Image 1 (cartoon, one colour):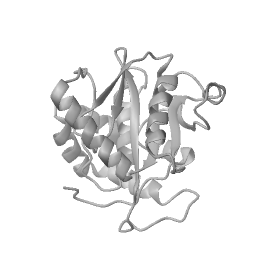
Image 2 (cartoon, rainbow, N blue to C red):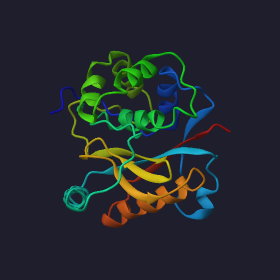
Image 3 (cartoon, one colour):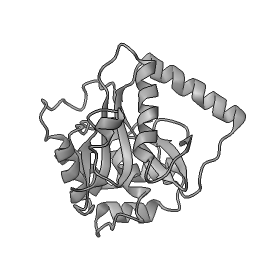
Image 4 (tube, one colour):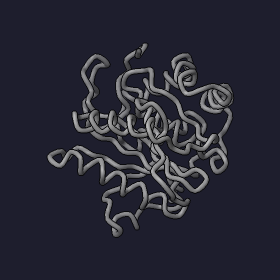
Length: 230
């Protein structure tokens, strides 16, 4: 059960980069817009790419697919790397923050995190299970306060925390040769098959297209990436 409702973080690279820097991510890495999913548009994204994030409407199609996918995985099983950092979402409208935490936490071998709230959270959360990590985030006031502060910024009119939000953020990351979808509202990480650091963007783009194809009348999809700063 969600314990607190936040104002959602806008899918605005400038806002998200301020948030990451406030939490100790060096400016060698930054959030960039992915303007299209065809090869020509993907070629404009700086490399290397550490994660891809998708913002999409939580429609009936999403809920139906989520249920079907979970049932299928529970029946057939799947391989999930024990090195994956995955957490559950307990806080309403915190999916943007959780997508960013998932993106950074699974790339700490490349991101030299500075001392701060995020580094401490990841150290404290390392030995916990996904549910306990979600609970720990609720108590991580430094991260929550950074979210609240940056959620007030951005180009759109800031909604109140009580306004219904039907958009959701998820992350795609590479771990030991496999593409994983990390969605704090799902029961577990989703193994989407082989990938590599060099093909993560293209392979994640294919899965993003699958999300879009399940909602063909919907246009409110946004894709961003955590990539090397230009």
